[in-house]
Amino acid sequence: MENNKQVIFEYHDVTASDTLKNFTKEKLESLFIKFDFVIRADVFFKIENTSSVETGMKCGIRLSAPGPRLFAESSHNTFQDAVTETVSELKRQLKKRKESMKNY
Image (cartoon, rainbow, N blue to C red; front, top):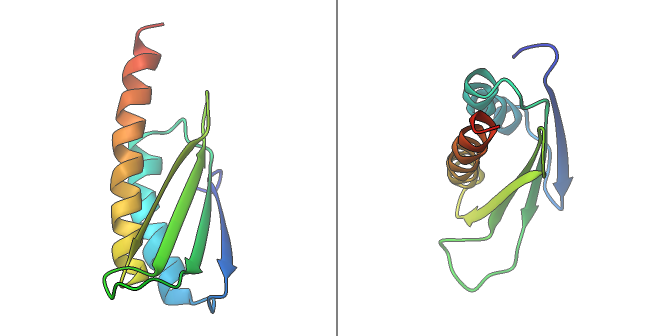
């Protein structure tokens, strides 16, 4: 990971794990490379009480970049799935942001 990119992890009722941390950093790496204007990511993990077995492991990621902060979150039955979907959503938001930056 590029040294100037900061990733902050917060765990709410979740045990911190290096596996999860490394998985998330790897996923974020592609965003940092493709969208070099992103300077920081705040990653939140929490467990929700849900009636569905499909959800409950929640990941939220807030990115710091020029303009309004970007945020996405998702809930799945594993944190890895939640991270993957959240990063995909952020990628969509970043593409839009990059397009609007080109227009000025």
